[in-house]
Image 1 (cartoon, rainbow, N blue to C red):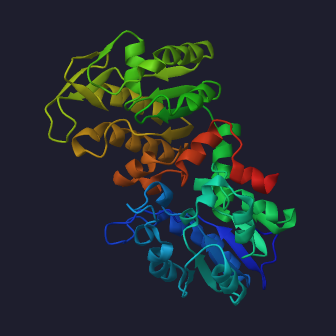
Image 2 (image 1 turned 180 degrees about the horizontal axis):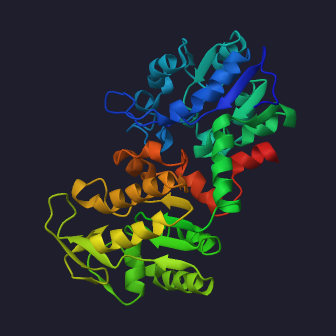
Image 3 (image 1 turned 60 degrees about the horizontal axis):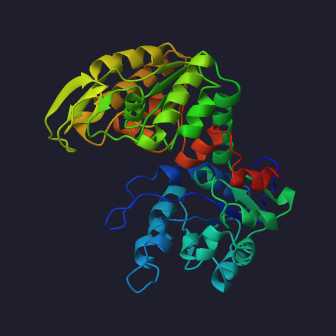
Length: 401
């Protein structure tokens, strides 16, 4: 950002304003908007005009019965009042991100003004990464800034292809993107040790590549949540009605073996809170993780496991957390995830560096009221996962070459 002279320049900026809205189109969590504000304000203060583009939801996958896009549900116009308030300026709006109106309004902007373009995913050409569509987007700016880390793993027109229409000296990362990459690189390339990764969530299949990579990086790997039952069954246990991916049993055992051969301590739940129904009011009991009877399912790690995991976390110097330890949306099954959140916060307070890797982990740490007591919370779930797996993100490569 410091390399650009934004004065009297139109700055086309890709942001991630894919924020949750309620039934009345009110924003229920504006984190992604607030994270983009420093970059927007820096451009405004430097005399640049800011043209913002983003997606909201998946309108092409949720068409109306007549096959047309549901504009009212997915329009970014709902964002304008809140964005204007946050930026303390009247944000203009273009009812299309592509074509005459968007181009005209971008050219008419004065220095310091802001224009928000309509949802890029109203056009099927966006996700297909079509050149002509990307070229049309590029006409709205003299400089391209990508500050949408949450979409950096998508090779879409507005995240990747558009960058090819700007010279190297005309494109760069925003402050958020730079910070996200720096924090991920800290875990990957220069962690204080011991490095502990905490993984959770429903499926082993979603995290296989990350697990494989972490067996080469970490001293400790903690696995909880639904994915732990695949490991339990692979070890010969019974898991009742718990989430389990039978196709990944062999792969789970391979991960265990690789961790052992690399000298990595892999921690799996030893006890589990099980329920006779998937509901907050279900009957519960605590059993060994590999001894879950039929008709019951594991919904949280047990008290013994919470203590074991917390001890490992508190003795760590670098912590990566991606995925809850149970069905934390139900208060009765949030105790395991809360225990992890408290342990991560305590370790951070004791000098450890902690990175919360997007997705449900962010919701979990915020639900526990500890979001301000960890080192960094990523805005990109899928992007952070892929970056940590060692993949080159298309949105990053489009800028760096």
